[in-house]
Structures are given as structure tokens and as C-alpha cells.
Length: 244
Image (tube, rainbow, N blue to C red; front, side, top):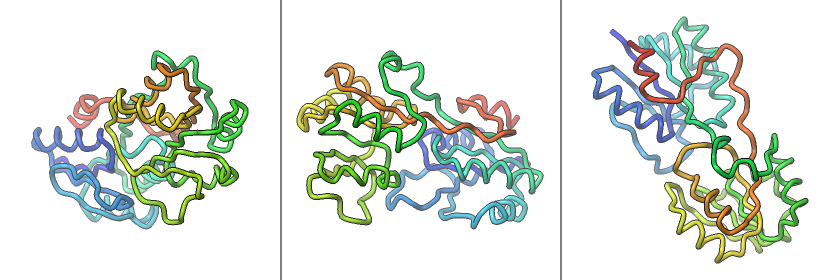
């Protein structure tokens, strides 16, 4: 019998979990546990890390899993690499499900694409960012430490572990967002540069459209490369086909 371990925490993972349950598959979704109130998928769920490659391989073998699907965030580089290595050790086939990026977005050609967060900061500074809007995640904030004297607007899903600089405005929110709301946010805070990463999908894309409408510059961090040997698909249907 097919038994699937699904590494989740994304909208795509939740959609896949629902489809697998509907199709009668035995599936267990695994969440990292970094978000205090995660959106839960249907079906069986485990929460917490694996303790590295060896731990994940042990779960695959000990849990009797026949397939591993990595549907974590496109920027979860370490987890994706660990999934590929652990699946090889356990002798379990692995597939990566990743939503399409924003490179085909209508306004992508006007964005400033960079390879990492330090380069994103430098690019924003070159654009004269005085009131930047940071949406690259709380784990990237060390790269903007020199911006304590700027009127930064920061949006994160979870509260910060350390207090933000006095001039920063911290917004706790998660998608999906609407274009009208994003336009109002950018206007209200007089944002002059949006910093984001190529997460893809519709949940957080509204800010990109709003920025284009308002003439606000956008800096985008490119996605990391998928580890060699890891097969990747973009749709739930492709995963179902792979499993059958």
C-alpha cells in the first residue's frame, strides 16, 4: 500500500494533502512547528523536526513510508536538500512540489532581481530607499541591521524574538492579501521600495501589482537552485500521477 510522508507548511501542501486523502492515500503531513498557529492540513499530522538527515531517513523507514513529497517553502533550502539525501538513504522515492515563481508576472521585467538578501539591501539603497517595505521573513532581518535609522515597514507572520528598531513599523499578518489592501498599505506608509523574495503563488502576490500601480520599485531575491538529483513538479495533479 502506498504511504506518503508529506513535508508541508504551504498552501500547496494543504491542497495536496486534501487531494491525497480524497483519493484514498495513506498520508501523513509533517509541519516544522515554527509557526505558533499553523493552518492545519486534513489527514494525519506530525509536528516538529527530524533531527537532520538521519532522523528523517529513520522516520521514512520506521514509519513504513513508500514515498516522500517535499512541499515545503521554495526557500526552505536545507529541508529540500535533507529530503533528497534522506530519501536516497531510505530507498524511498522523493518528489518536490513547488509553486511557480513570479518570473512570468506581468511586471517582472521591471523588478530588480538579486541573488541574496545582502544584495537586496544594497539594491534598495541604490534606489534611494527611505521607507522600505520588507517582506522577506523574520529570519532575514540580520541583513537589514544597518537600517535602524530608516522608516522601515516590516511584515511578518510571527512576532519578532527581539524588539525592532524604534523607527520600524512591524505588521503581524499573513496572506492571502488583496490588491486594494496592499495599495492602501503602501500609500499609508509612503513606501518607496518593496523588498521580497520569489516565493511565487497568489497568497502574497498582490503587493507586486499594487507596487506597479503606484510606481513603487520592487527588489526580488531569486529562488535558490533545486539540489541536483531532486525531481520537481508544480501541480498537485503531477504528484498524483507520480504516485499512481
